[in-house]
Amino acid sequence: GAGVSQSPRYKVAKRGQDVALRCDPISGHVSLFWYQQALGQGPEFLTYFQNEAQLDKSGLPSDRFFAERPEGSVSTLKIQRTQQEDSAVYLCASSLENKNTEAFFGQGTRLTVV
Amino acid sequence: GQNIDQPTEMTATEGAIVQINCTYQTSGFNGLFWYQQHAGEAPTFLSYNVLDGLEEKGRFSSFLSRSKGYSYLLLKELQMKDSASYLCAVRVRTGANNLFFGTGTRLTVIP
Image (tube, each protein chain N blue to C red):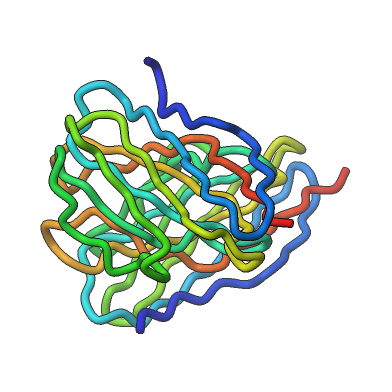
């Protein structure tokens, strides 16, 4: 597609429910990132893939958060047993492998845990 | 940890010039990015600086001083559509594209 696509755009989950957020990066982009953005804050890094390899997951806040990119394109961020503090916008970004290239962001999934 | 500071809010008049500052203290440095984010939308890339100096791109310019850990984004001939949040972000390590963001500066352009 022309840009990074994320689905769903909005998700309301009951506390304790599991959720799965999808990201379709720009075709041909090797690098894929997940960020979490709380209201009024800048995005915070969660995890990074290069193709199917998860090279950095240092930003994942707990073991309830899990991300995968099995075929090196689409990625899924899964949150188990959601809690209220998980409420945020989850942004996905992709970029070419060249380190000097900017990342292109999707519109994000707004997760609200009630 | 990584520290990236920028003002929370700014207001400026349509047609004027505004400068948004960003200071950073990070464990490494491999480039600084500015992104624009309208409410409810994706951040969009504005500029990238890795060497000291000014980068100009139309109405937007960005400056970097690595020795001072300082950057600014300059917006000229402000338009109402420039009302948005402006995010300063630093790439800390070579070989890794993940960015550390500031909290963003919410700019309001008034008539």
